[in-house]
Length: 457
Image 1 (tube, one colour):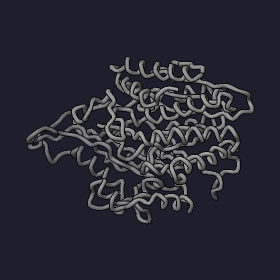
Image 2: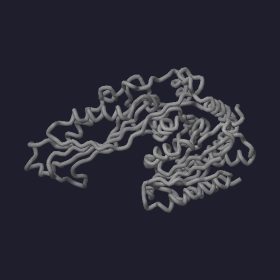
Image 3: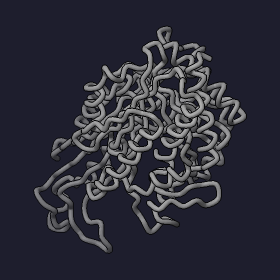
Image 4: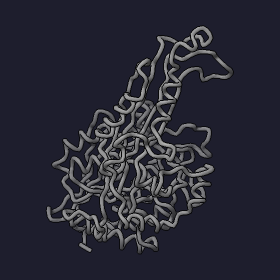
């Protein structure tokens, strides 16, 4: 059996940045590394071409009556910039204390290696294990997975399984595992407002036309009420109600609002009425401004009225909200609130559907839930309690993983999402790291989860 930490180092050394064509060699190297590792533990590996970065599909087959689990991960990573803020080279992994540092260690190379190593250990010990396993590893997650839905449609007959198992979500500390049972969706778009055909001298022409920056600012100010709610008619109509068991699970985190406030570095919270900060980030939709600009941005002054201004807007959606319906509401509201004496342009960006799965035994568990998935939840409960010393919590997450909803929509499969990265792992930021203690416990837990699933426990 290979050394998982050494293999993770090797994996991280491949700079697999999917967003930048200059890193094509790093993408190829990471892909070939994973394909070779899966071949070494007995999987039949196929590299499936896409319009951008190929997908790795690896099978361990068996009789049709064996349970079939798909293990998902991604081999691409975020850009490492700004490089000067790294304490060690981003693509030369370094172990300091209990952590391994390097781009991709936590997102997603470390968690993916955790599952590959768990499967390798398990099959070495139980070569006759009655479990079909498929690894599905893509190279475009960090750029929105544009090739993934097409791939799922094309390969759906080969991806008939009982559920998907992955680790691309977080946990609050190294002793408390959280299984994510809900993810927020996304709608992103840009608003561009133009007035004059070019920038104008503010002394010669000021006072005769509407300034685009003013128009953008007034639009932004109109999209929230003073108490923090989104001010768009119908925005909250389809929001899934929060169940009592969800609030109980959230209380089990034992999180401290004052510590959270200090961590954020803010003087006070600003949440919609009736929700704590921890509830707001998991259960409510949002509308945020991600970028705004127009006019002169340099040092000193330049007395112009800019011809254009823009704002970038993102909405996080919660289960039961449709991206198509929300986009229609948003665009209608923007068009109504932008004055007629400017030119409006709305630019579509990508979107993602929210997702929710309910653990068995809860009040709103679907009656048609897969019995194999229910068995996987039971196996996860037992394995995590044994390895981490306390049972897992089941919580909705504030972030978005759009491919999970795509898998549900196209393949009809739910997902078991075991969190493994920590708040201080610095995902997407300089000095990203992965806790080696969590990695080791994660391997042991994952091994037991899959063995329990195979045995029918």
